[in-house]
Amino acid sequence: MKPFTQENNKSEYLVGRMSEKNRRGLNIFSKANAMQKITPCLWFDCQAEEAANFYTAIFSNSRIKRVSRYGKIGFEFHNQPEGSVMTVELELDGQTFTALNGGPTFKFNEAISFQVLCKTQDEVDYYWSRLSEDGDEQAQQCGWLKDKFGVSWQIVPEVLGELICSSDSDKSQKTMQAVLQMKKIDIAKL
Image (tube, rainbow, N blue to C red; front, side, top):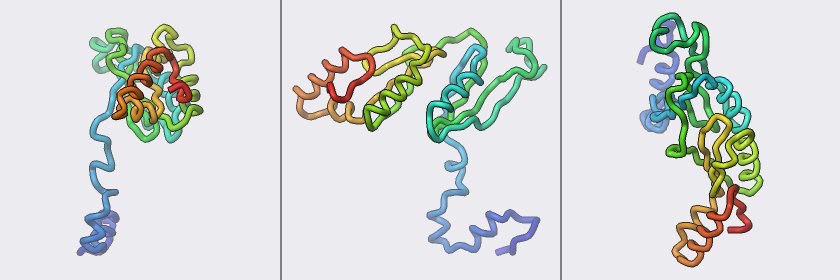
């Protein structure tokens, strides 16, 4: 083992000094820990930064990680002014997303949605209120909502899955019937 010097990496030195057993259990140096394998990319017209700020203000353990900007290169393809935001890498409750200002070509629809699992009715109420602010009220049904950017969300109490998947068919069917009558899920009525 080489001693730590400016020529070698301090983390390599520290890991090299650990026992084999401890090294196997240490994953802070793994690529899997450094980068998420699958990252959703959300295509906005020109609201990526506004959306990133909106979402990071709602979810705890959230932040904007970095912002890239359009340059002169590729203007004939992207038609975006030099210096305008191209992508925003953000983290929502530990999950990384990319928001892209790609222009008006593509729009969000209900074929893709993000589920927010909630332990309590207070959590359901909080996320519903915040995410539906200025959203499409016509799109609210069975715990689904569409936010002001057109992104679809499902605000789901954890207990809902247990009730719908219950081995008691009557309980499962009654739960489903109740959900079909709701916009925002009311746990007490399940």
